[in-house]
Image (tube, rainbow over all chains, first blue to last red; front, top):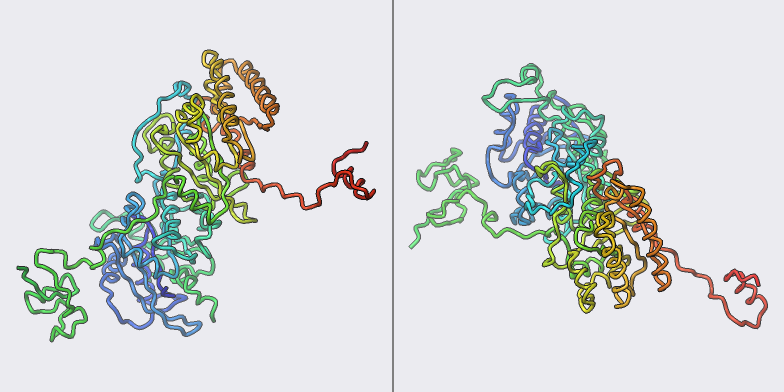
Length: 289
Length: 341
């Protein structure tokens, strides 16, 4: 296990790539103070530069390559301890997770990444389609006269893609505890992205209300050694895809002199714009001063 | 014969054909991506893909229902409490299981929080027709085919104090139980009963509410319990329950008459089996209140509380001694047995 290697876990459109882009701009620009500062500029930053450019220009950051795994390495320094370390992320495409749930197969790369990771960045988005509403919830108060008759069953096949997202996430997190992963409990930083749309006071409150099965699992199962939940708006508002008309927030965000101030994060021990806080906590360096 | 080239690790680099490094290294040997001896056939066409991506995908746990061997494996590592659900077809066995899962999808329930499940995919498959995104207007549960072997659903529940309780529910087609009731040799094909700590007989509220179906069904329901009792299928069982399902149907139409009949039938069941030395407890549930929503989800929380309750502690004191010569022992025996005579 690499002590500074984290697995980025999240389905499609959960905000993983935008987080990476904003993080890179944040530490590279040095516009605001962060818990982890940028270290030496040594490495291959093509992917980070590509997505950070989109972020800076005020466009939605979309995954441009369809590789299953994007390796991200950032040299950082912890000012408190003087430690220098390389943060490594394995940014898997959301499609990898969706296919794993549906087919029960995953690429061997994923197995290696899980085994090597010391912590997990779990992404869920507050900008989500409600996929777990039951028919009874939807029609509460309406009497269903026709339903009194014994129905004859329905053989409409199960569609894995329609399984509520929180169930899919919990299922795959549990799979990490079993073969072929057999992962020991590790720290989990939950990132609730698109936080500007969440309308909740804290990430933990959002998770409890919007994804209660996942919330219960993280708090009660042995899979997670420790859990923290962060609300993150990595782009600061609603942005259009490149080339599309400006949305409600683009002009406002572009007007900021320091683009790093677009970033908002809430959670335990975080600065207002400091995306490095979850990584500092995952690394355990926050306990060393 | 295959024509081969030395390739750069960089997919965009055409050094193999142009001699120029994509990143401008000159000489090209300075490029860290150059001169790796990854030699692939021309016709492979996937030079940019990492080698590992071409390897066969790896299978992960199914997440689907468990079978007997899976239950045995789980029980070897974790103490489990097996609840066998027995009932005719459409009595509501699968609906009960799906509804319990659905309750935990909404948050802690019955004083317990979700702490994991080996069978989340199995649960999701049983519940998908109750979701709005199924496109249905009324919720239902997929039928369990008689061709399917007995299935087990796992649910780890935590009260945040002790270790999680691992509940396991068995489910199989009602036809299999109906067949075993009529041809009792088939009872030996119901191994879930020997695994069970608790057997719940599901009394179909819809059939009991129908005056046409009621007479035969009421007789056959008792016959099922007698059949299992007479053929030794309940020897390992610590508790037997009767769960009257679909209580929302019982509350429709002539509700008073139906509830009166159910009351009387439950009393008959308790007395009849008590006479045979079997304690039967009766409860009412509504796991899918679609006919009478005012009934709501009924009896599920009490059921979970019963099934997850701590087992009674064993008596650690000495057994009372009979005909003991010492007076102190005779007094102790009287106090223990409550014999004041």
